[in-house]
Length: 364
Image 1 (cartoon, one colour):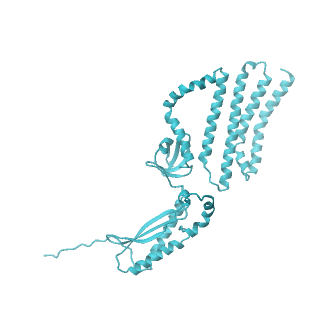
Image 2 (cartoon, rainbow, N blue to C red):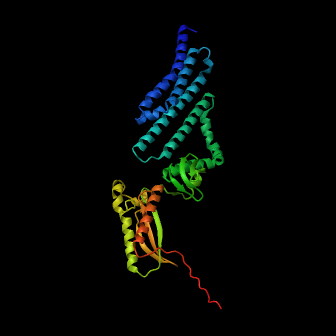
Image 3 (cartoon, rainbow, N blue to C red):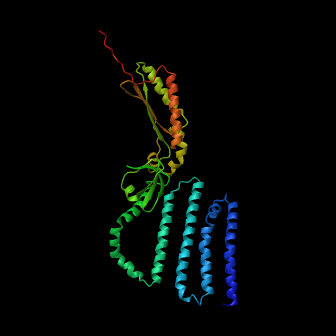
């Protein structure tokens, strides 16, 4: 080994000794600048970027120093380089995708996370295919013959893996049709919960009793899916007030008007005036379809004497809270009920409850 080779080997050893403490220092500097989104996310990926780079340097320097001894292993070196470069490229793509997601989230822009996850998964598949093709090529396999034979073999594979292929294309269909997104509350014939991940073959749903269910995408794509999250304004409040029988129609009319006025002036109940500003921008951008159906906007408000029941006069209350959040909706619903009870208490009317009359025959 020449003196220059020895110097190079010593430098390589020092590089490997110094690099990891240096990476810690780089992470510390990035942590100090964590308020900047790019640096904050880069902080968590420094090591993932550095590891394939370090291995690339080490492998190529070792092969350079011991070229005479490793001449027969140059093909292996080439394959290792392909693998490490693919690894590095995959990590860079992940960084770019996750950074885009975080930028959009920080700006409160709607993000289809499942599209980015699909891109990452497809990137894995593409990189794996490239590596496999390179390996087969170095092994002397005729790739053209393989591609040609796929015409027949593809049919055989297709029959054997038809469910997997169906799930893959159904996942693309679900995403392209915007049927569901990560974080959506969905309901099917058998499952209800929050979508946690839309994969290439299956979707994971976290149920409300905290169980994780994995369901094939073909099953989701070929049955109805009720998506409760595809709405921006309006969660329904529907209840019936049962009043004791009365012939005081004036009091009934006044009660209906007061309840309706209370709902119209309630800051958390949807009316056209309250949501007009929120929807104006989207109305200008999307004039080719009915906005209320496209984005999920409901502003119906009804208060009517609905029916005469067996033991009560029933008043229907039908309205929508502005917020679709479950807890906020419960708070609004509670406040509405309390206000209705106060209105009834201030009126000459009373709430009804089931009663029965028992007649006793006179004793002999």
